[in-house]
Length: 110
Image (cartoon, rainbow, N blue to C red; front, side, top):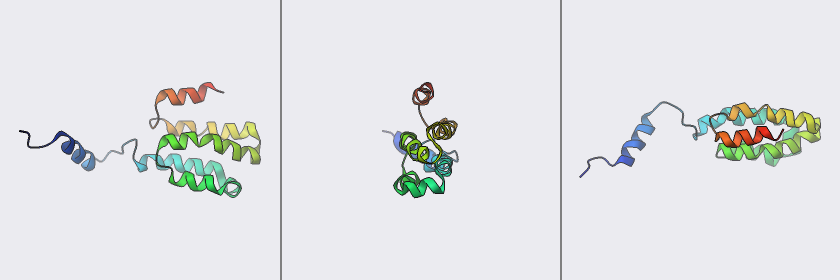
């Protein structure tokens, strides 16, 4: 009979650990701030729902797939070519949060 269940031991060590896990809210905050900064106040006025959703999206995948909606909003402000460039500049901030295959697929389109 085991004294400690393996799941319990791992959850305690995860709780006591100081490193930021890749799926934690703290790991998403820099990405979230960069996306909101790229959207800007004018973009937030055009699409306040997107701005609000960016603030509360729960994971990196949701933020990654919101980029297409950001391009749509930013293209109304800057034009499509510049909007795509702005959103492409956000891609490095997702490094380590998403599977490599997903990031590579986004890079190949251009």
